[in-house]
Image (cartoon, rainbow, N blue to C red; front, top):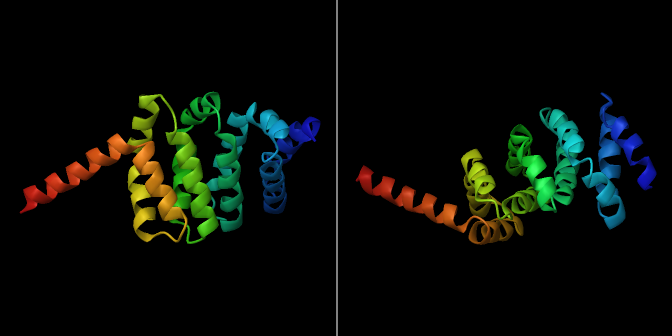
Length: 178
């Protein structure tokens, strides 16, 4: 199936919603296999740009598959660096945390966890600036199982310093209000 991945990516440029959903679903299933994932990851920037273009229009089915695909793609450091250059795409994927669908929330937490699992502190700081900690805290508070546990694990492992700083700021602001 690897030689057909460029053709599938070309089909993703279609304006037809059915074709777009089908090709995105196909790429998601292909990204589960290591050999095909390697071929897709080499074109991760193109895939993320195509997904970002479509994430603006709210289709619950598409959002679910797109976030799953994105979570499968951001597995290595190079891909994370490429995706960090597409800040609007990350912001659109963060909007999926508002979904009431548990599967979409779990996939979004997986995506954000993969993005935060980096040694580059500048990338983490950029994610925090975008509001990742706030979104994960909302999932911890309001989400359905297992996404709250996953979000809390991300906050405690990958974003622990930022999470603690934000908690201290909230306590301090509360103290100032009294």
